[in-house]
Length: 338
Image (cartoon, rainbow, N blue to C red; front, side, top):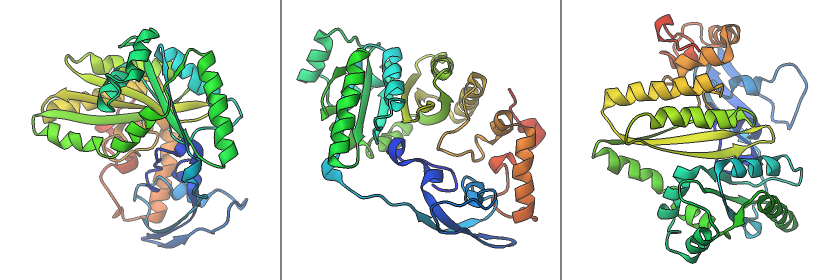
């Protein structure tokens, strides 16, 4: 999690790995690297941030100290809203994140295709909420589901929920209680296991995610989704999560019946679409070997040379995780440039 710069589902409030690490210890071919266990310092470049996200290329992480927070589940406030379309839902997320009144912990906005699946998967279809949503004119294939939670002090969570309800109402959202969020929580860690069952029938499910700013987010969503949907009979569900005042993460889930080689080609095409849209190649999944060919195209050749210089220092014999991770020793013919 640390060496991929990962994120948990509550990162909008608590932060990603790079925000939560206090100190680390790595074993490297040139010796042990330990960082200081203090909340902040100003003694040159931050070695913690250099090692976080290194994906085993510089050393093996053997110890890490993380920030902890007071656990107050009794104060958690759940919410969900339905918006008439992706644009109005996106505007609400942006306004909440820039509102300076506090932010949710879990915070997600599903696009229309994912929203319609969510209504079935979470048992919303056929309930009074579903009936009311339809009566209010929120149409299938257009409506978007927002859900989330607020963590913290009792007065804080009440205030944030009250303020975000006001924002959502002003931008066309209808409050649909915390029921949908509870249903999502109930199946949150069980749903991914459907992947193995579907693969037995040749149906592949995979995910790709990226980060972008608010100005580019509509373009990224449209272009990546257009590529995925260009393949007949392919499901493409997208949600926005891990949100910031400046932008958000987009998480694409694609489902289709295809063979292994076709999947690899399709996967490469999606990553090409992400790169062409101007988004990052990853927000919290890391780079690894599958996404490595696109890394230089995103960060630049001079920037990649910094990674290679660090690799030469920590691992001069290239024994740690060789073979393409972080594009450090990737053959030229495998690089995917914009």
